Length: 291
Image 1 (cartoon, rainbow, N blue to C red):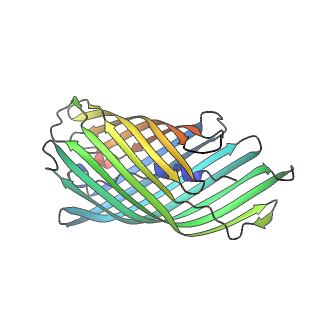
Image 2: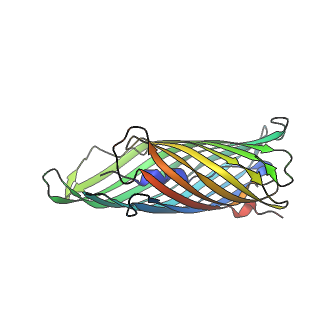
Image 3: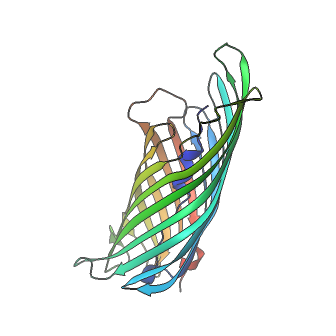
């Protein structure tokens, strides 16, 4: 059975930003969902939180700790298979960020990074037509210890009085790699694949370009979002594009963002009913609401 929960891992991480762009303490609450365009029975949702506290200052860097917790649920089917699964994860690690006012003549910059270790729990069950043509049942449980790393860059126009074109460019690189995994799986209640586990390694590269900034104290920024994703478990490659709307206070990071994406499998792959998806989500960062 194909295990689809890895598709959502890239949407449960947020930018680790700080200094004059964020406070030392930050909180992000997020949630979202997806539905396949060709088969609405292929769908899922996720929600969670990310928090960081970076009180240490060293050579212009703010350093500290970060924690994350999330949950996902999904279901899928095609002509011969049905499957539903759940995944939960929690972890923590190090976070850092640096603000540079004179990065370029017209731009300041903020660079953030984090490195975390997470415990991930996956479970699922389904029904499938076997090689003998008979309908059988499948179930699995997997536990992973996963190392994640992230680097992001923000390029910010120094003069932003409102109604500014292209006020911000965001680039985010994310990588995760399991360091330990254990899995048990059953076919018709008989133990199978004792030495096999699903590889939850993944890589992504995302770009967000703010088109214009409306307002003075509270600003609205429509953005264009593009992203590339590689999931090692099923060797799949995906491309996403779509709009994002963000609200922010002048001089601070977003406190609310809503996005809607078209995510499409690309490269060489077998045709399937899940290869094109609508993805939508929301992020709320209450500590970024400033007077």
